[in-house]
Length: 170
Ligand SMILES: CC(C)(COP(=O)(O)OP(=O)(O)OC[C@H]1O[C@@H](n2cnc3c(N)ncnc32)[C@H](O)[C@@H]1OP(=O)(O)O)[C@@H](O)C(=O)NCCC(=O)NCCS
Image 1 (cartoon, rainbow, N blue to C red):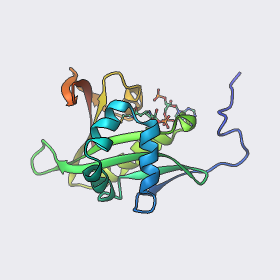
Image 2: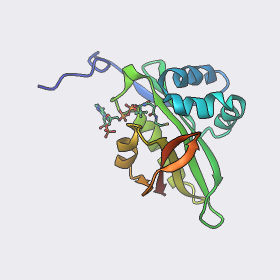
Image 3: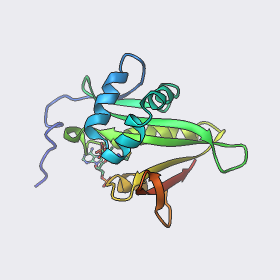
Image 4: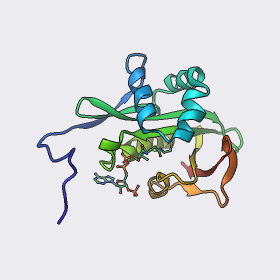
C-alpha cells in the first residue's frame, strides 16, 4: 500500500519557485541554517556570509526560493564564472537545501531543473557544476538529472573534507 506524503495529503497544495530579493533573503538564511549539511553551511554561509549572499542576490534567474503553499521551504544558490571550455561560462550550484519536513515532494528537483533550463537557454553557458560532500545523499538527485560524477573525490574543497565534483553539459 502506498502511504501518502503527510504534506500532500491535504486537498489543496501549491508548489512554486520565486526569485530571491532583499525582502526574502532572511528566509533563505533560515533554510540554510536548518537544512544544509554542516560542512556546506560552514564553508559558504558562515565563513564568507556577506560575499556569499551578495553573489546569491546577483543571479536572480538561477538563485531561487521554493515555496510550499505560501511558505518558503527550500532554496538554491548559484554563481556564474568562467568555465574550462574556451570563452564560455559555467553555472556553479553553491547550495541546494529543502527543509526536512518538505523533502521528497520534488522541490529539490524543481530548483535544480530551473537552473538547467536557464543555462540551456543561454548559449554563453557551457556547463553546470556542483561540489557535494562525498557522503551527501543528494548524489542520486543530481545523477538522475544528468550530472556526471568525477572519477575520484576532490580533496580540500570543503576545508579538510572530500567532495564529488558533478558536471552537466548544457
Ligand atoms: C538534497 C535535497 C535538497 C533534496 O530535496 P528534495 O526536495 O527532497 O528533492 P526531491 O523531492 O526532488 O527528490 C528527492 C527524492 O524524492 C523522490 N521524489 C521526487 N519527487 C517526488 C514526489 N513528488 N513524491 C515523492 N517522492 C519524490 C525522488 O525520486 C528523489 O529520490 P532520488 O534523489 O533518490 O532519486 C534535500 O534532501 C536536502 O536539503 N538535503 C540536505 C542538503 C544537501 O544535501 N544539499 C545538497 C548539497 S549542497
